[in-house]
Length: 433
Image (cartoon, rainbow, N blue to C red):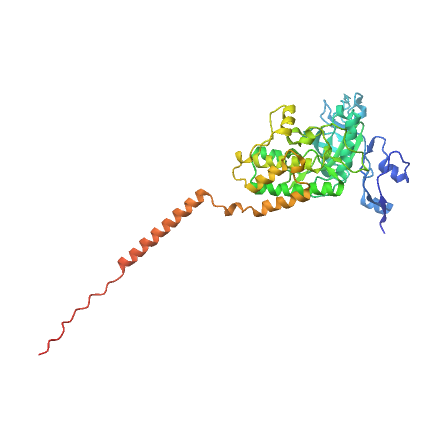
């Protein structure tokens, strides 16, 4: 009635367009989309319905070049112009003053690939992360921009594209959803769902160690997400750490930054180069630190290091040089969490010891084996409210003593006020006469 639903995937840059519409949707000379290998359902509306649904001056799928915004130094009017015109002299449309278009800078006010950047919200090894607004959908997104110096490296660019391909396959509530990626005038970008809140790292820095119950609950939800990533997509994360875990306003965790993930599926681009070291040294498994081949047990080690940080609010081996950290990951055990969190149970300590075992064969073999252990530790741990504290016990004893004294005093008072019957006279026995 309204149109046709097409079953297919994104157009390849090397393949000719099937229809003129496909050229308009996917084949941009200025902003080429780098989409994932996933099947899409595309609705093509009839013209009369499209005219009613999309009364826009430009089609909703239009993506222009990088735009920069700057003010007129004379009248203050803000101008928006294509970044390719940097260095040109133009006239202000409001006051006519001659202006030099500034050099393009990816930051607040710029528009990249149809995303208008609002502010920077983070920065990591794979680039800066901005809060942006997707103009076509009018929704907030987290936009990751690869630095220009890194974008010039073909190896790093390929790694960036691989991040997009892998992340776009995932569909799980414990993982941040990927929207799209592309290249706009040499700027590589990756748009993903914006999760308001804070990272787990920020939460630990601000509030200190988590309770054992809270840490186990977060760990259990993350374990389900990572089990899905491996069982459904044969994907390793390779960089599990508190800074890559987002907590939404309800405290629900979501794992992000899959740029260091690698798939072991034979149909993909293959594993990284032999001997390469990828990840964060403080949370890196011994086999990752030594450049050996990885399997899910490497992520399980990083997961255990993250749980250790949740219970201690500390970063493992913080302040040490990278070389020293990598050596310690190979040989030195983690400090006892009870140094910072004495209330941690022996059951959770045993679980941590197994997760952080240096030989991979001594760890849990899979996420499916770990999840029941986490559930068991969480269920068997008594609730915090049922464990009486020494101060509470003291108050309870004092209250009971005060109640007993009050009842005794009340009983004595009632006894004292009770009326006494006069003594009955004793009759002398009659003497026979």
